[in-house]
Amino acid sequence: MGNFSEYIRRNIYLCHMKKAYSTQYGSQIIGNSLDVLQSYPDESIDLVITSPPFALLRKKEYGNEDQAEYIGWLSQFAKLVYNKLKPTGSFVLDLGGAYKSGLPVRSLYNFRVPIEFCDNIGFYLAEDFYWYNPSKLPSPIEWVNKQKIRVKDAVNNVWWFSKTPYPKADVTQVLAPYSDRMKKLLDDPESYYTPKERPSGHNIGANFIDNGGAIPSNLLQIPNSESNSSYQANCKKAGLSAHPARFPSKLPEFFIKYLTEKGDFVVDIFSGSNTTGFIAESLKRKWNSIELDASYAANSSFRFLPKTLSEKDLLNVYFSILAGKEIPVMDFLMNGREVSELTKDFIHAEKLHFELSGKLNKAERSKLQVIEKAAAVLF
Ligand SMILES: C[S@@+](CC[C@H](N)C(=O)[O-])C[C@H]1O[C@@H](n2cnc3c(N)ncnc32)[C@H](O)[C@@H]1O
Image (tube, rainbow, N blue to C red; front, side, top):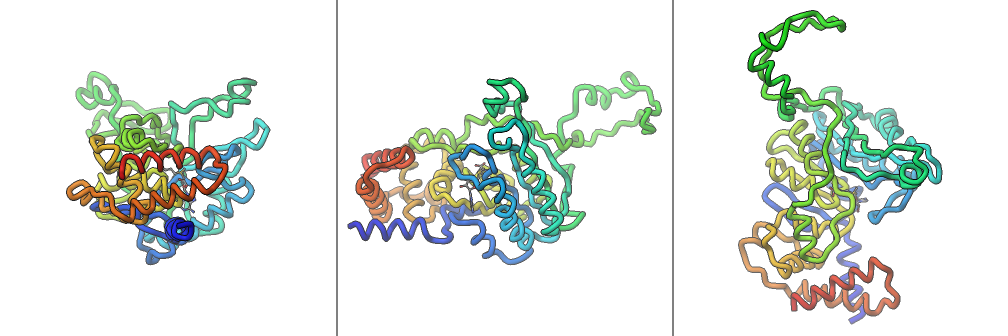
C-alpha cells in the first residue's frame, strides 16, 4: 500500500502539466508556467495578465524568491511570454512594493522589473498603472503602526508591457462613469459653462459630446474586499482555505475589456484562485490559467460552481481534480456526481501518507483534517 500511495502522489505532484477543469471558453492547468508556456505556439496569445508571487520580505504562504534573485526568476517567464504573445499582444503585471529587510526604506525591485524587461527582453512599457486599494491594511506594522514613521502602502504597480508601440487597445470599452458635474454640463452646457481659454492653452468650447463615459486615468481605485463570491462561500462550505493573495475581479476585468476582444486568448501564468479565468469566461474570451499548486488550482473550480452545491459535491470536485481527473464544469453540474474509485483511492492514499509521516507541521495537519473530513463525507 505504501508503494501505491507513492505512485499516486508522484503522478499527481510530479507531472509537468495537467488540466484541472475546463469550461466553455477555457481551462485551468496545474503546472509550472515555464513548462506550460513552452507548449503554446509562438505569437498565439493576446493578453497575459498576472500577479506573480511578490518579493516580499516576510515569506508568504504561497512562496517567494529572494529579492536579489527575483528579477532573474521573473525574467525567465517574461522571455517566454514575449515569444508567445501576438505582435498586437500585451503583458500586464501587477506588482506590490516591498521594504528592505529590517529597514524603513523601500526595495527598488518593482522599478527594476520594467527596466530589465524593456532593456533586455524587448518589451515596451505601454503605460504604467497604479492600483489603489483603499481597503488595504496598514503595513509593515513596525514602521507604520508601532514607530509611526511611514504611512500605509496602498498602491501596487501594474506595468502594461507590449511588443510594439501599438498593441491592441480600445479605451471606449472601459470608460468611467461621468462625474455629477460633467453630467450637468452635458445636460445643459450654457447654464454651467462659459467658453474660455485655460492657462494651459487648451481652448474649451461649450460643445460637450456625450461619449458614454469619461476617459479613465491610470490610477485604478479598486477595493480588495470581495466577500460574496461563489469562491469564498464554497471554500468555506468545504472547509478549505481561500487563496491568501487574490486580486479583485475589477482589475483583470479592466485590462481584459481594454486590451482584448471577444474570442481573443487570455492567459494568467500565476493564476492562484483563477480570478482571471472567471472574468475572461464571463467576457467570452478564451482563457488558460496556470497554477503550480494543485490545491489552489483545484479549489479555484469553486468560482464556477453555484453556492447551492453541497459540501459533499464540493469535496468530490476538489479531490477528483487532485486525483488527476479533469472536470468539465458544465458536465459536473448536469450529470451524475458519483464519487469515482480514482478519487476514493486518492483520498485513501493521501490519508495513509500523512498517517505514516510522523510529526506533521501546521499546514500538513490542516490538510489531513480536510482529507479525514472528505473520507467521512464521501465514503
Ligand atoms: C499572487 S498569487 C496569484 C493570485 C491570483 N491573482 C488570484 O487572484 O488568486 C501567485 C500564484 O503563483 C503561483 N506560482 C508560483 N510559481 C509558479 C509557477 N512557476 N508556475 C505557475 N504558478 C506559480 C503560486 O502558487 C501562487 O498561487
